[in-house]
Length: 524
View 1 (cartoon, rainbow, N blue to C red):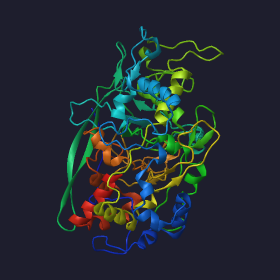
View 2 (cartoon, one colour):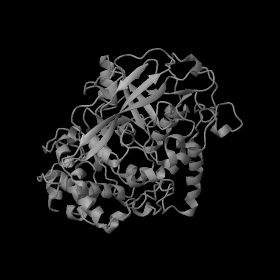
View 3 (cartoon, rainbow, N blue to C red):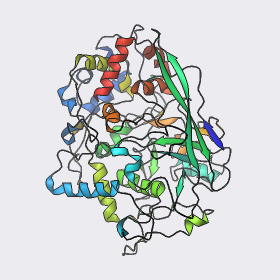
View 4 (cartoon, rainbow, N blue to C red):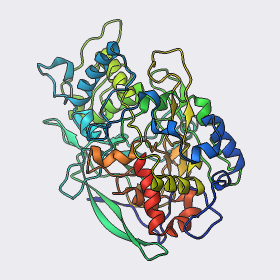
């Protein structure tokens, strides 16, 4: 049995915030929303927003519609599953067809359901909705007996040749995959094909004490990989547990111009604020060209179409014109010899299981899942929490507002929207506690790339919109990349690395301060 132990250090890091000059409960003046981050960063945030920082940091009626005119006001378990509200009747049909392919399970080939056969031979789940529960975020197994339906394990090996290092440096390959297990652990197989491993987790409590004596109990995961189907792992194998991300607002994030993301990067920390931030560059499997990455926990996917096809391939074992090869490694002969559901495409294209029409419907669906409106945005407690969020400089990474352009494509619903996603879509070093380990439980070197330019310590800033409804959509939903955080405060207290300076400021929050910050996050 292999154990991937995510070791803890004696101190717990905090929110991705900049420090305040105050030590008493983070109480500051509104002007400090601009002082908490470097002046150059303030200029960038204001330029992207098109409004001054003082407007961003106080009540802004426009922000209630976080997703602009695409947003919805539903606050139920269906909050993540509705189409953009500005979607015309003539385009809703494509949304619901895409929903059907996203929601319904694929089956093993051959089958009478010819449009949905070809599952596996190795796979994690049979339907997209199995990971993205009600289009929301996933969770780690709750006990050692649970299946890892909405969590998977990504794999990467250190580069060992000059060619591999050069390819990684130039984003020509995503990673160096394991020679037997590939780049993702698949814990299920169809009949006659051994699964690669079983994933389980054990939790260890980690109490953290605030200055006023309040104790917040975090939990640290130890992942177990058992029942190995194809031999032992290598000791240097880097292992990354990841829960499914929510699906809302992805079409809006896709419309943020590349330059708006790149101008926020500060990989050399030239402004001296301790926040670096770098953009990932990824090989686009559709165009064969390197492009800006923006989707996934490490921003390793360039656009929704390729994100979807990669998930079909690696999570479900389905081929498409973008990912035409089965997700079997050369040594996995049973997988290679298993029947497929691939159908002829014509026009010289290879037979595939997810044809271009299905891919288009699913892309349209994932592009148009609406962001719920904010709740109680003008409530006094929420506004006090928003003030703390800005005073501490959390917006240094969680960029609040963007103005989307009108582009020469059919993304009509997203054109020209003003949105409030609270993300810079950049990679940040979040510290040792959140870093992925090797299979032996060791921290990898920071010069080892695991997903294009990203290393094991770096994570893309997640969008915060809709996060307050995550557990309304699914009560089991958890936070952070491996699902270790059960509450938003736990997620804040796990932040580290570039946010290490801020832990004392957050830990000094009293009961009222904690209630205010939580109320603001819950309102998003």
